[in-house]
Image (cartoon, rainbow, N blue to C red; front, side, top):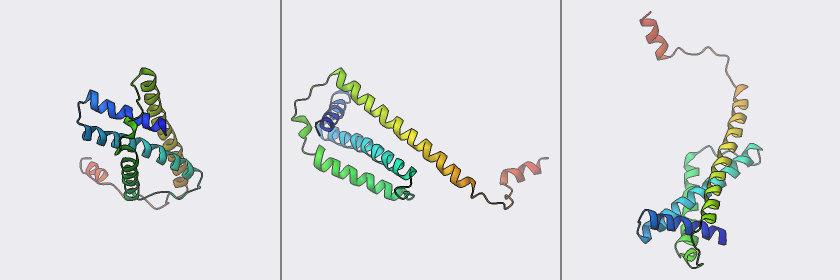
Length: 148
């Protein structure tokens, strides 16, 4: 838990020091960034489970948004709102900053890699479902024939 509080502290201090935000703005920014990062990690893990057909596929974007909003509310209410991460006496240092940047890069890399595997899986599934019906001519094709 202390690692997550350090992550929150670094986000909070970034927005407070560099962007000169007020306390409430910096808390909101810390909530938004940490919730987005948490959501990327959770949905990436969910994608791995979906790749192996262990869970059903989430096809409705509104359910995904609702889950992210719930994560955000829980994150803010239980972790950010009380400012516990400021009571640990954390200091900004280069090693901690490097670790957080490395964590963010690895999170994005994992999400992109997982998405690529799922894209290939979906493509393979769709190859067998291609219809043998003749394709309808597109509007662009009709317009080209006018000028021929």
